[in-house]
Amino acid sequence: MNAPLASPALKPNRPRIAVIGAGPGGLAAALLLAAQGAQVTIFERDAVVGGRTRTLATPEGYRFDLGPTFFLYPRVIAEIFESVGARLEEEVRLMRVDPLYRLVFEGAGRIDASADPARMEAEIARLCPEDAAGFRPFLAENRAKLAAFRPALENPFDSVFRFLHPDMVRALPLLRPHSTVDRDLARHFRHPLVRLAFSFQTKYLGMSPFRCPSLFTILSFLEYEHGIWHIEGGCGGISEAMARVAERLGVELRLGTPVERIAFEGRRARGVEAGGRLHPADAVVVNADFAHAMPGLVPEALRPRWDDRKIAGARYSCSTFMLYLGIEGELPELAHHTVLLSEGYARNIRQLETGILPDEPSFYLHNPSLLDRSMAPPGHSALYLLVPVPNLRDARQQGGLDWAREAPRFRRLVLDRLAALGLGAIEPRIRAERMVTPQDWQGRYAVGHGATFNLSHDLGQMLCFRPQNRFAGAEGVYLVGGGTHPGSGLPVIYEGARITARLLAQDLGLRRDNTRPQPQGGLAPALQASP
Image (tube, rainbow, N blue to C red; front, side, top):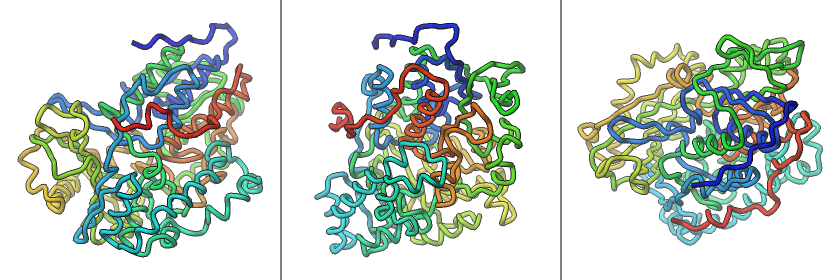
């Protein structure tokens, strides 16, 4: 049992902060602000915390991650917990995954990716012996690239003049902003499938490796440098842990309470309207999906940089078609994480970008029961299946997709393609099933256009061109989440929450700034060893 954290001393003039949404960014910001003396209330439309980082449970005893299925670079959240007087390893159990994942190249072999350099070189050599020599230089270069780009990831970037900062000037030669992930990797790996093994991670951003800026080679680097982690019981456990710590710090959590709008006096936010009444606040942190929520929360006149036309015309990530399957029996044919990369992967990408549903889709499978028996009943498996598909807006360019009609056919196609992994006929073994389509992402989970990974991360929507942590035009409004600087992905969202909390603390004169990154870097010692 953890000792309760000391809540800030109650003072009648403590700044009041309303947080809209209990996703990862909202929870992290609430923790940091409450620890600095603010009176924080989180308003969450759903009955559970976590947003897309939650765990689904079925009556049959299966557990599934709704969205993220693994934890990458836990240093950031560990530092956040430590800064508020808690310890990540006492709140959740992190289990290192090895191999990181299995990549199956349809009709062309596979790689069991490993964070051990010698093992990974041997795996690369199975596809292209000459490319094995490129692995350690790739790691060294991206280690330097991440170090160079950290100032941009860890600080506000609200003006083009930030590009003139000495940190950015020094970083540009490493970042190669006008190159793509695939072209940058070609400097280390000749074989296209080897490059694909280090670039498919751009799908975490809902983007193509052939278009995604070269900066994002750091995604695969982070996996090899710091490992991939499973949270016992599902990734929702980290959201639940953050909520527990927040409540121990005095944060009020109002579940099942959607916010209708932010209340303003002139240009300044004065609270939120929820449940038919005003809840006064000195500042508002928006953790809702940007494209979905901002047109309703903030009047257009207070969004000069992101008016309705700009939001409607922005570029968005792909969506995902999801199956959550409770399977009788174990699935030893699969790794903990398995990615099937279609023989027509490049054509798949073109189909997604033009709003067409892939006919031979690539997909990702999560088989956590191999490592964590709490995810399924004894002798059973909890299988998560994700297929990238067009978002609803891009699909409309091709006449639209009626997912109520399309879902059964696409489900059949995807289940049949499991045969490429040697699973055979899996359907007779299904004992529980849940499906999420792009229309569900938009309707049930309030994701704009069903774009699961938020705004795209192209050069025109990064850094100062992305919605900023201190929202321009509406005073007292701050943003966190994947649609905000610095971007998507759990560690980046947590970093964004630190930026937002620091800005807000400065603006409201909170008592201390404990939101800066720790200088030493690296994982907490308790997280370094495998279980």
